[in-house]
Length: 178
Image 1 (spheres, rainbow, N blue to C red):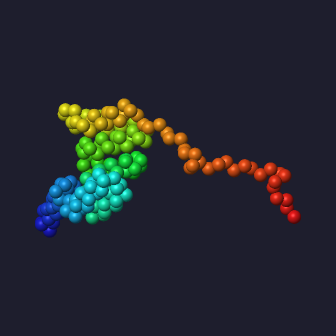
Image 2: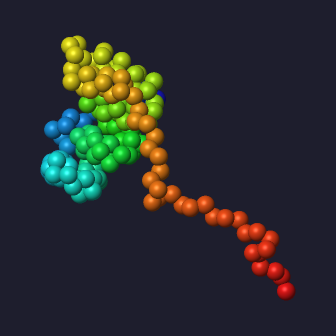
Image 3: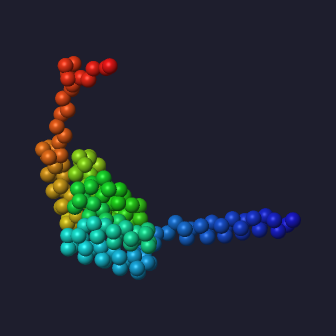
């Protein structure tokens, strides 16, 4: 009976110490090497203009190791090039969940937000970048320029994509019931 209180205290201390390891971030050098190789392939494919192939490589890299922040950032960049700002924002959010102070992800997400018309949220990202960069950094300059430019105007629907209006049947043309 006299060992119950110290045993409980010791078990609580051990439980607390062992749970600290779960909250630590994983360094980029601990990412699966195969995932990093797939990310490199994706970067090469994107540089060559093969965006679909690059997307496949980045998604494969994330399937191998979902902690690969670089794959999220590059996948978001490809999504922006494809005109998919919503997907880009989501991928940048995943990268920022891994490393909240990633200036590249903050800038890219800000640019994607501007594409969607969310300039206020993009300005919040710019403020975070300004706090992180002591001197002016290229990401800060690029996001500032995107905010100043503003969202792209809505493109009118192409004539080939537009469906012609269907005329309503008049009483004279309507089939008569038997």
